Image (spheres, one colour):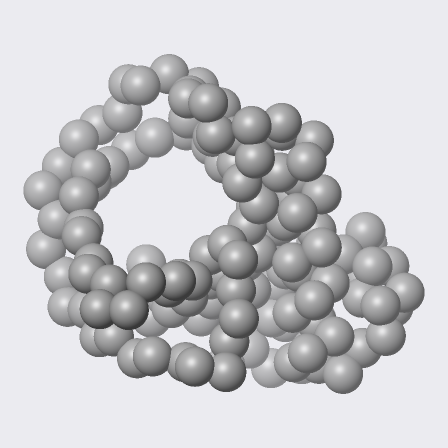
Length: 135
């Protein structure tokens, strides 16, 4: 989506970036290897945030904050996505851990990202609108 920012953890000096496996259509959960493959064309800008110490990717769209969890166990992936959102809310919105956890429960949407291979994925979507006008 135009205007989306993807934050990736980088743990190797001089790391490179590769874009591939574009999908024009794929259901949430990626339950099979089948998707509508497409070419990718876009403009990418890379900014290094040395103050961010992520262990998994995080994203921000014009309307949502997105946290992610990855693990061989789907339950652990889901827990990681929730914990990552709680961490984000504590660091960026000044919320207490308990308040952030409660907000995730009442306003966050937890989704299965993928189950197609050995790594299971979950992501939590939190609408920016609950904090006032979306930027």
